[in-house]
Image (cartoon, rainbow, N blue to C red):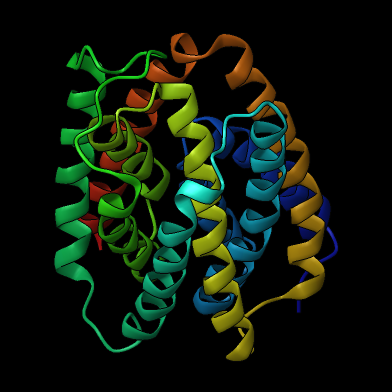
Length: 251
């Protein structure tokens, strides 16, 4: 039974997480503890979080797309593979021990933070790409699998890999990240819903907040570009690293 106070409170939290997700990702590390604190069972918390995130990401993606920052046709193959990867990840996570992954991901996130902080490629200037759109598809699929399997830092991994491998400027990479994140969220929501692990009323209330946050965050990112995205990526990566390491050693 969900207490009445949970609905407006988590809707307000979703505004914050939607704002953060639209710029740098990582909102799930705020929303998941909030859902669990509110008494939502873990699997339902995962499914409900994916539902609200799907709507917030959709709003951010819409704003980026209207500004011409998303190349749809060139990334259709990657979208399809991300969807399949996320669906497989959702299925696999039900039977795999994740404790080792809980330790590995903070290490990877810390490396990402160093890359974002030190790499001269982390600007709004496009650079020479190392992989074509088709060549990047397996990388996107692997990150999609990770999103379905575990999740934290997915947006950060998409953004940094798009900058490093596709040569996109940071704002354009952030925009394309929303397309891939939205795709993996759809796959996850479908599977969680199939298993009856989504609290629809709560999730849709949170979705309204996430959409507002996504709208605000995407407009803010487009206005300030790499000047905002770069430091926020570093801050979110370090915060996620600390949060995951605390959870690993405390639990």
